[in-house]
Length: 193
Image 1 (cartoon, rainbow, N blue to C red):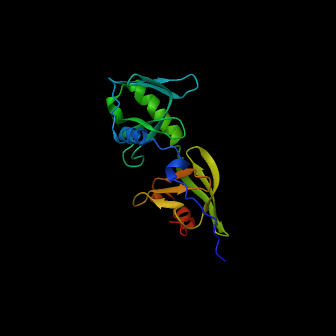
Image 2: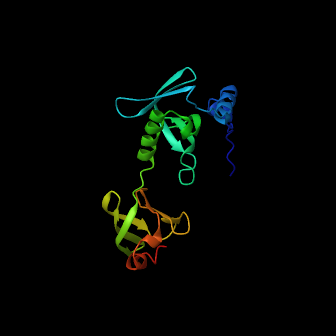
Image 3: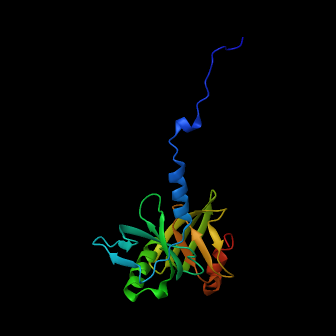
């Protein structure tokens, strides 16, 4: 038995507001690269320790600092973005060295906060159980215990002997030189590296 009711297909444009001109304008703004320089951008520190910016006739009470190449070139092409959920880019600092010293210090402070990555100095113990690795290490910030998945991308090679380890919570740790560890410490890492 066939259903004879007449269903009307909804028009997709009726289901959502669609402003083609606004979308086009937003796309053009996203694709436009704006360089922030000592001449056109004024960075200040807020009372709460955040970074504020005056640029292009607009004041941003709080901005985020993102490195385009955090591991290979942290001093160049630094993206400054709005501090909301969209994190829309305001502009780019081509080279941190071109900014005044006080601005360099403020930006580097924000980078250290965003890209906090303790350096592993010693490996005390690493054991695996049920698909997880339980680490006990000494870092440049003291003793630390964390857990990683056994497989996947928990341990990533950044060079011949340099590694980045990411725990279950997304915290990152750097092992700058595998060969700076003792033979016994390296033996503990055989399953992981």
